[in-house]
Length: 480
Image (tube, rainbow, N blue to C red; front, side, top):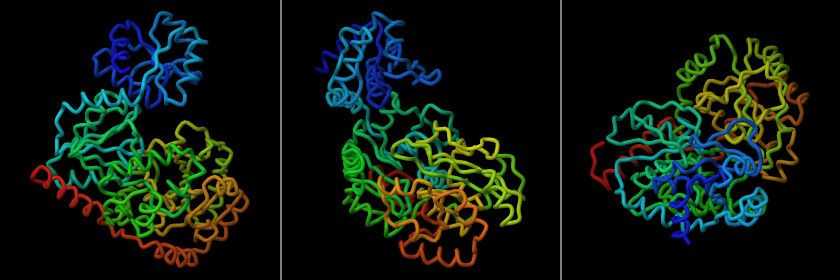
């Protein structure tokens, strides 16, 4: 079947790829491998983009519009097998009489057969942060330490289509392109903080460090969600665990969680989390954040940073930033600025809030720096509250959809058992801020954090880079 697909691509004058997800991008990368990507006119989708949309410089348009603009185009359906039949029917309704389908696994095998002709570069490290979100989280702090050491390594970073900024020592590549897959296939080491999909194959001689992005015992994850999320989510996670050579852990809690819920039986480095090193000295982070948003040093920062919702609901994002600003200024006696940082999965969602009363901080690449610069945190079920706890500053939970979230996700530790004042509506939140008892909070916070067996002491990045250097010397005897 793959040979038939290859012939179809080679004989086509114009190609429209039906599907703009991972498989659509994979097909485009495959066509690029054949050096025929100039034939791809568009990615087609069933809906209509809200605004002009492009993927790798190629327009993403509605399937009916694609037929009107390129009536003689060869349409190739590029989606998961479970959706192939449905989209083939939709393509036929749109006027594409003979939509082309293919076996994804066969395409992957043929694609990687070509990629594996390129040798592994043992001292090349490929970084990713939350599916292309740029320079942040644990991977950033590992890269920073390697740069500080002047390590003899080549660093490549996978990014999405948005603009991102990196130190000169790091070059970037767009996710889903042929170059992206080639960089992955030839890197001696991978460092990521979320799972890699089935489109990423690991070859013999590569070393994979999974830093993970979580640190807190809040909402349940991975296999602990069995029955609450599609099986494919759990299957993808466990397949990624089989590829992983080393997991980083920030606490005994997470070390145990990796064994039980992540399906991981390999080595765990109980190093602490590199991104948490920043909380040992927050002055630089404050300086950077205040400069980025043009704030005076006398401003008090309040950060609202809620997590995503599995069902995409937006009703819980109804914080009243104006009321928060007033009560914080009343309680703490300082001029207040409210920042709002959306979860990476929520970047395109409009929150139900007065935009004139807050500053959108979602554009700030390093969320950990935002946390380190923050004086008061308001969140819901986000693990960021654990990271923020290292500052000792006040954190408040605002959970207007608590009952729904408990059903959808449930929690490792119930919110009312945490030291953070809990509110289910704005009136409660305002009251919690008004009557905040700092001494009581610090005492309860200290006891709460101790029970998880934290490994962080400000030197996690150093320990992780020591391990990286050891691994690289072992496989390539390079000088670090």
